[in-house]
Image: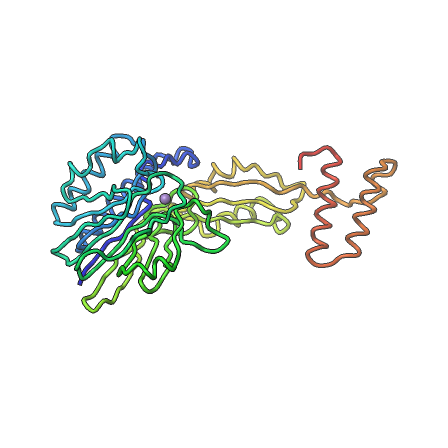
Length: 373
Ligand SMILES: [Mn+2]
């Protein structure tokens, strides 16, 4: 039995400037979760650790992140655990790559970085395993990271690492290091450890090919990532067990202001399910009563904001105009005409279309009154 810890997209050095004064805390948490990933490999007695790209968020890194990686890889070494990595799209193997500036392999004898332009491999006879991979040479490429992949040794187990986008018709951008299901199927691998997509996702059952996602929350991520504990039995059976190690979580809540009568109700809605490790983006939509004054910045920083790790409130709602009738705007030809036309439209439509027409009337009046819409 062979046990692998597969991680990717850790993005050490992410700045988190969108988190304001909490950015520093999340930068530290990213480092802490990385340590936790390595500790998990040791606790779970993994035979090997695979990092499928984007260990770093950028090729420019503070020395302390470089030191952290070296320290942690050496911790694996003390526990007789080798580690393989490929440069991804954020830490690609270009001319200014961090992997050219720092001799990680010289400082961590248990580390293999796949740096050949084409697929290369490393054998681990003690595990009857061969690992395959190639680096991303730039942020963008039309080449498949699986091109040329095939079993090249007599090992029992063959495992590949790749960093790129799984081809889904109409979804993938052609120059995003795209690979196809056919390539996965024809690879002859027992498992493919993928990086690049920031979510846990299985592309193929046979052979299993998984994205792990980032272990800790990074900007733009909507679903929790994990590390994957992959066990391969002698009979060739593969088991993939996602383990959520990240501390911080993220969600988005949209609030229809048509349903909110006062500030207390608004606060109650925003704080539903709040916790100290949650990053929440609340967007206020629709039409709101004129009496209800909303100040996003105040909401973010007062007792409401303190219920979250970070709260962002965006106000996209508009004040409802009371009793719009032609009579109100008598003598104002354009407004009166607009109201007449819109009221006809409202009367003659139903369902979603009616709602849109009603909003259009409200927004149109705001606009004609010279308000910012
Ligand atoms: Mn990434």
